[in-house]
Amino acid sequence: MNKPYLLAGSLTFAIIAWVLAGALFSDESATNADKGRAAQPLMAVEVQPFNASTIQRRLTAYGNVQPNRAVTVRAETLGRITGINVQEGTAVRAGQSLVSIDMNDRRPRREEAKSLLAEKERSYEMIKKLGEQGYQAQKMVDESYSALQSARADLAKIELEIRNTTIVAPFDGVLEKRFVEIGDYAAVNGEIATIVDNDPLTITVHIPQQDIGKVTRNSSAEVVFATGERRQGNVSFVASRADETTRTFRVELSVKNPGGSIPSGTSAETHIPAGTIAAQFVSPALFTLNDAGEIGIKTVNEKDEVIFYPVDIVYAEADGAWVSGLPEQSNVITVGQGFVRNGDTVIAKSIQRDEDAKAMSTVQNQPVNSSTTPEVVQ
Image 1 (cartoon, helix red, strand yellow):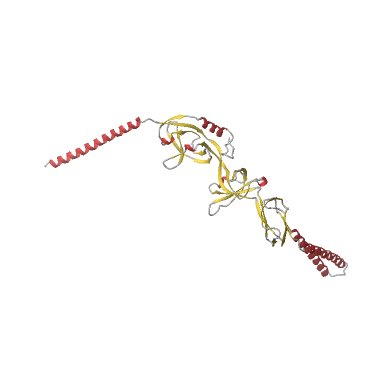
Image 2: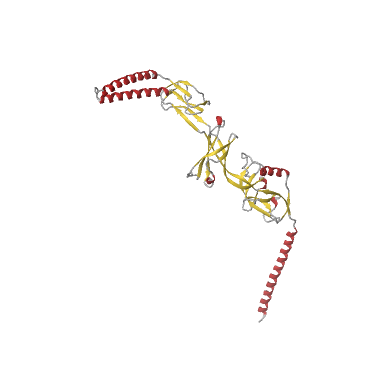
């Protein structure tokens, strides 16, 4: 009768013993694993001290180079082209003759208008005196005066027509394109030539809505043209309304271009000041990625622990980049960063390489040319 109870008790005791034995062996295995890990040597890395500098942050935008003004000159009177006075690509001054149109019968018509005007002036003076003496009705005086004014208008009209036979440049610039040749017939409002004024140049860029608050009118800016030339300019216009499609703001920069040496119609890279920020200048070789895919830099703290800091690239150059996100003073891992993880304890060896020391001394202790790097604020 007691055999089933004895059997159940035996099984229960066996299960308890099995569980305790498993836990014991598991703890022993974990202890042995910890001892094994503790026995592994620490990774040695080289670190270099980096100090932050306050630099001028800049917004980089790409845009089109436009002339200060460009206009297509048109004929204001009709006639055959009799003279080409300026060739394409030639610099012109305001009022300089570009093209001449045949006078035809305009000079005789002007002489006729002058004679008629003189006659109307004599007639009006005579009728006016008679009217003052009471020998002429006021209506006749008024009609004579109207005729005089009409003669004056006819003369002014023919004189304007004669002036329009000489087509002149409206402002200083370059004759970019001529649409007529000698012998062509110019119609009223017909295209004659295009004049372009490239001084100053206007560069139009579009700034994202999250950055437009950093752009101020009349602030200085750097422009790098597609030709390779660099010029300093200023922000001349900031739109007060965003584009409904792109949600960007139109910004215009003005750059002096004496002599028109830089052509319009090309592209340009602009760098617009956007406040200051603390940043370090580092080599691209120091960048790593964490498990989340963030770009950053590995450092070592005072406990010789690896600390990963995500960074933002403020300004990139050919030999490095200015980054923000690091502590003001940090020991950056320069050798071995690919073999350690965030939180690892390492053996940190501080090394200041000659070339790195020279580069950092140049960047941090000397004035920086804003045409190549952000300006260091002293």
